[in-house]
Image 1 (cartoon, rainbow over the protein chains, first blue to last red):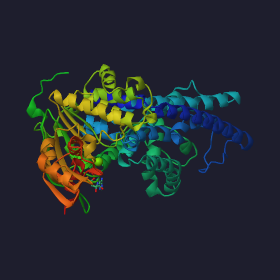
Image 2: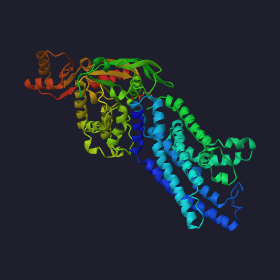
Image 3: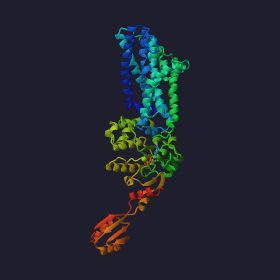
Amino acid sequence: MIAALRTEVRKTTTTRAWWINATVMFGYMLVLAAIMAASFVLSIRSEGASSTGLPGGGTLDPEAIASSVYTLAVALGYIFPAVLGALVVTSEFRHRTITPTLLAEPRRTLVLVSKLVAVLPFAVVVSVAGVVGTVLGGAGTLALMGEPTFLSDTDMVRTIAMSVVALVLWALVGVGFGAVLTNQVAAIVVLLVFTQFVEPLLRILMAQFDATETLSKFLPGAAGEAIAGSSLYVSSGLADLLTAWQGVLVLLGYALVFLVIGRLTTFRRDIG
Amino acid sequence: MTSTFDADAGVVAVSGLTKRFGAVTAVDDLSFTVTPGRVTGFLGPNGAGKTTTLRMILGLATPDAGTVTIGGVGYSERPRPAHHVGAALETASFHPGRSARDHLRVYAPEVGVPDSRCDEVLSLVGLMEAADRRVGGFSLGMRQRLALATTLLGDPQVLLLDEPANGLDPEGIRWLRQFLGYLAGQGRTVLVSSHVLSEVQQTVDDVVIIAKGRLIRESSLADLEKQARPAVRVVSPDAEGLERLVRESGWLAQFEAPGIAAISDQHASDVGAAAFAHGLELHELRAAGTNLEDLFLALTSEQTS
Ligand SMILES: Nc1ncnc2c1ncn2[C@@H]1O[C@H](COP(=O)(O)OP(=O)(O)O)[C@@H](O)[C@H]1O
Ligand SMILES: [Mg+2]
């Protein structure tokens, strides 16, 4: 297991994809958080706290603005750690290195579990980069506009720290997803489409009916936000969330279910 | 490196192996044995089932029937199999962004060797100068060398190489020949697949020839060579002189016409030399027998229906 972990860690350190991922996430979240912070502040200044133009018709006070902005990485940026995780598996198929991988370690379950564990340090780097970018962009903009940043508020710090946890779990979901859909392009496209379009739409639609509203909390994006304990969706009055622990379990559940499906399908077939 | 290998541990035994892909039976009830201390050529035309067989030997593909063992044990049942068996499949697979050294460093922990072994195998295959270059920029020949280096990481007793001469220049092929001979000389088992016999003819001691997934021939190369019979076609304006030469040399010959002879079991060089010694004028001197490659083609194209 130690040997397999070292091999898996080296697979990532010897390629550039992971720090490109971290750098792009940092920059993207920095800009996104700055824009969102500025537009929230401007909208309450011009129209008052009661009308923010949010789809749920919720209200945003300064604290809600801060927490919505600081959790943008969890609400919108989780595609980055998810792709990081997926690539751990799909790049082996894309470059056909899965053959030497399975020659060196034929126990396929061990290979998959090693990938799941070995992605953790890189997931932490990417997630911290994303969250730091978000907070820098968001708090910087709020401070520049003379608004409170709430960065000394312990609840806020906890939310920020927990959003790192949520993002790291997203990387595990990515690994599992990559094991199911090993075609790299397909995996990235499906992840993008699901996280950026399908799930947000589903959450808005499912929030309309009591029966489906509960179910919508178990969507992976909602579970990630539950871990952070706050999000734009909640502030906008669209939905409430599971508890943080439930969120952790739900995301871990997605990761493991995907991994098991991948092990029983792609990784049971002939490979190489 | 040690030369004291347990011979039994080096035997690759393939028995009744069968693999179907839909309607195609890629490997059909195939049995053969690969012995240590010799280089065995695993030969057959494209699509004969060589790669599929190797994938089953290596546990990458599951046979529909039959068994494969290496030293009595299935590849996947071995802890740290790369320590015992070094294998490279035909599509040498590398991440293009990794350097040659990093490629080896990735697998070193799982193979169970220290990082210093990476540079050792790079020197063995003559890639030390390219150690820090990205594999994406490597030529096919360099990739073949790196694939070979990867198989050598664990200093394995058994080497299974799929088309290792593909993409090598003549100098590279000569190098590979000497290198594989050296490894087999240490008592290792070396199996090399190829779709052209001539490519490995000077390398291999034994041959396993397959076509359409079935075994055609399993023998030593020497036995196969006996089956390939040379012949020479000679044309001379001096019909009588030619008949005399054939008679005096004790050759078996058929005269197609006066002055035109097909001489069996002789090489063109010998016939030419004898004619020169007899002062016989020749207008044509041509090898007309089956050489080894012809025999290989005949074996693999006929006996398969
Ligand atoms: N994964 C696969 N799916 C379907 N057919 C395959 C697959 N792999 C090999 N084949 C078929 O099996 C036969 C043997 O192929 P292969 O083992 O690659 O031959 P060789 O290595 O001797 O050239 C060919 O007809 C090939 O098309
Ligand atoms: Mg092949």
